[in-house]
Amino acid sequence: MVLFLFLSHLGLGIIFTLVFVSREAGVKFFRFNAGLAAILIAAGFVFRPSDADGASRVGLFALGAAEAAIVIYWATVGRTLAAIRPALVSLAVGAGLVAIAAQALDVSSRALALQAMTIASFLSSAAFLGGACTAMILGHWYLVIPSMQVSHLQSIVKVHIASMVVRVAVVLAAVFLANAVWEPGLGPSFRHYVTSVAGIFFWQRVLFGLLGPGVLSYLTWETAKIRSTQSATGILYVDFFAVVVGEVGPQRH
Image (cartoon, rainbow, N blue to C red):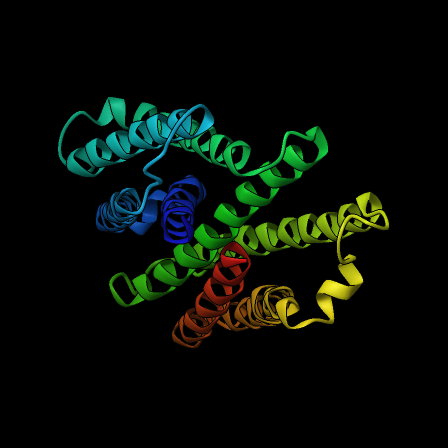
């Protein structure tokens, strides 16, 4: 389940963030990222839950629709059927949103507040992962197209920073909700959790998945402003690694 969620969220996150990349990045950039997203989602299917029912089945069907749309997009980008590609991207994004929402409903309790929080958590996680990955690849793409304007890298870094802000807000809301719903006799409190051995997953998210990317994305922004795209790309590699470490740990827990 951990690998299924992580791989599908990363693949869908890449699809979501491709919408914000300028066409000047070139056909090969979009083909590469579409192919990467398709491979990640296909790999996620290998680890899909075997006892799928209800929301889980809806999620798998929607994920399959997103996979089909992005594969067709990958096969046609830069070649033929240019008129249908925006529709394919829209289908992949829409199906991806449905898939993530269904996954969240499948693993959350029936309490409405917890369901809403889980959906927000899954969506923000996918956007955060996808933004970090797409920014890293776009930074590398300046080696392929050196003449590309640095403003495109700055734009995707803005998207990454925005997704990080949303992610931080969701984590803070989750902490607030955990404290609000806890009552004596319902098990260890959140305060006890974060100070126990199991709390390492929470601190892993805070230090690696939120604080680290916050500092690194700011450094990337400042580096891109002086047109040092190679340095910015190097920082983005570390940033993506930090985001992955921060997102995988909490999913395991």
